[in-house]
Length: 190
Figure (tube, rainbow, N blue to C red):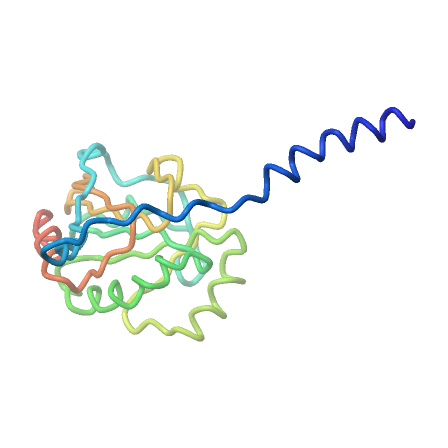
C-alpha cells in the first residue's frame, strides 16, 4: 500500500511541475504598412453531388399530425429544410424561410421539417413563441428523412425541381431573402 502511495506521488510530480510554467513573451511583430483586408463574406456554395435524386418517400407528419410524404409534392419546385428547435443556426434562418415562402407562394413550395425526437410536443410551444406567418411545419420525430436524404447535419436545405429531382443542397444556415439565395433558387425555375 505504501509502495502504491509513493508511486502515485511520483506520477503527480511531473504533472504538477510541467503544468505550470510562464510562457515567454511573444516576439515583437513588424508593423504592417496597411490594414489587412476584411474577410470576404461567405458565399453560398451548394453541394450538387446528390443532383438528380428523387424526393424521398419516407413518411413524416404534416401540421395536422397526418402521415405525409415529400414525394407527393411534385408539380412545383420544392425547397425542403430540415431543422430542430435546439439548433441555433436553424432557428436563425426560420424567419428568412418564412419570408421566402410568402414571397414565392405561387411558384415555390417551402417545406420545413422539424427533426426533434419529441415531435409536436417540442415544436408547438416553440412556434407559439416564434410564430411563422406562412410556413407550415412538418415533423419527423423518427428521423425517417435523414438516411434517405443522406443529411448529416442541421440545418440542411435541399432544392428539388418540379418533377421531384434534386438540384442542390446547403448544409448551413442561409439568409433566404438575399440576392445570392434568389439566384440559386432560380436554378429550379422558382
